[in-house]
Image 1 (tube, rainbow, N blue to C red):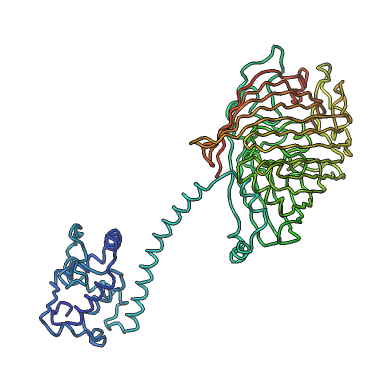
Image 2: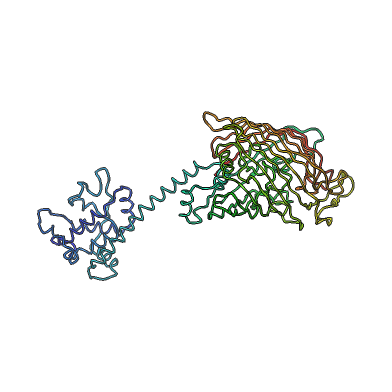
Length: 589
């Protein structure tokens, strides 16, 4: 019988089970106790049968396995073994291995519901598949191994949960400007880093990061008879607008091998071209692969949609730029700063190190776009359909160097040429007559496009702590004529000059006070009808990086710029003149 106290091997086996499967953590004991009502029935039955251990009985030292297997009480022990549990309040009377019972003195043993012998026999029969034969030694070992695995999995799952939370916290603390990670990935690796990368699966080499920008703009003062407030680079800088998600980016990038690097960046806050109210749509911003000729990343071919190497500020990430919007003079050259094409970049090792250094030091670099670059691209602009058979050609040469032991300076020159097809919208020329579409546009059968070519120069004196940043370009491109009846080839010029200062605070991060003058005169080809624009703008403000994850930019703008919105009613392309307050909160993740 199960309750026969003379059945010494049964009690010995029960004692072994109580010691082998003794959990070390109070929470584990209580969790296992509450997981099975059947287990409580077994323990209750064991208590009701008054199981005891008599150390004076020499027969209780008989622990031979063959005797244990033959004992009628081994059914109960095997079932306890299968459950992975180890003790009950009644078993606390066994001689403890460490001088302690299963429940410590400060713990309250859970209450055990009453049970009868029929309950116990039913559970035993169910556990053994309704057989009355005692389990073999092999079956006992299998159940023991299974129970040990389950306990180990329980410990590992709890450890993994803790590790996941710790990794999440560590990842948030390590979050920084995404452009810093990008330039780190595009810099040659040491032999140890190469060996470590080879040991990983390709998907383990990818990093995921991103940033989001939330804006608020308001016009504080407008000149009498001024055109409505408008900014080509910010749709919330307009009448009846307040808050805006300007950018919401997620970046996936990494070296899949020593000869292939991928960079994928969608934007979840894009607007549909030509729509006045379709905001926050997903759009591909970057989607390319860098094919490295050598393993030191000196020579590479970039294939896909990426930034066109024209203009230092165009190449600088919006997450890393101080001023809220790019200057019109250089930015009007390439819609969205990106296009689909193939580019070659040459970046010697010392230049790689310098590009990485200025970003790692928080000096507002533009990233690694080579010392020399050359490429061909569609020409219509990123994420926009190509409209003609002509390809644009672009080239750029830049050189970063140490002016003194610490001061870094960068100078560069760039140029491009091609033909651009202008899209149109109906307007009333000079506000007179019926609306028409200007000649020289796609809709008036000029698919071949208009000659579009520029050359520009760059000078950057990195903020250590005082900084200067200036660019200027001249050229010819599509522009609406003065009569507003046709788009023709017209001369253009424009650029900017910016002064700024890097001030590291004793606490709460870094501040960058800045002042910039922005100028452009020429056809604004990305806009409908390529309106001839005249822009003069002063901007004063501060970027405050509270932490690597959060930064706030506040800007006061004094502007006189052409409103580039095409209107079928009234006169289009009048100047907006006024003062505005602009604010942006950026989070990096």
